[in-house]
Image 1 (cartoon, helix red, strand yellow):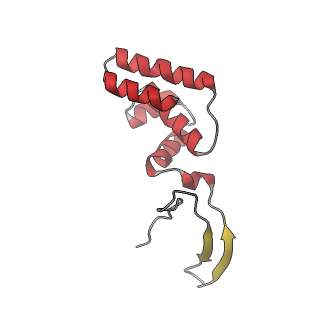
Image 2 (cartoon, rainbow, N blue to C red):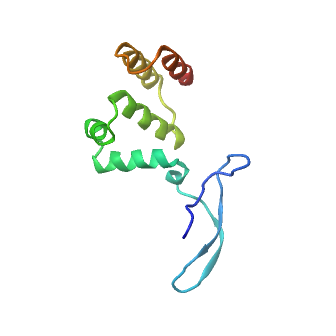
Length: 123
């Protein structure tokens, strides 16, 4: 059984570099420095989200249904993926996230404490 490739150092959390590749078919080994794809830096949940997002051709409504989560949750997941890939989220997006959190609180989807924690995570 083969293990999944880890992309971050378990000691310092910095991105790892691949030094060796091996072909099981012809037994060749290739040594050098190989960088991982930016997508390999995503955690398992983020990769599952990206897969659902792509399968549903970017339709947030369809992703909501497939993952059985709310619209604000899908938006948050998308923003988390973007941040993990190194993209900066604009203040407008951050303002939208604040409104979504407050909407979730108003609908009793989250507690006051959860809302405060989510708001603190924005900045």
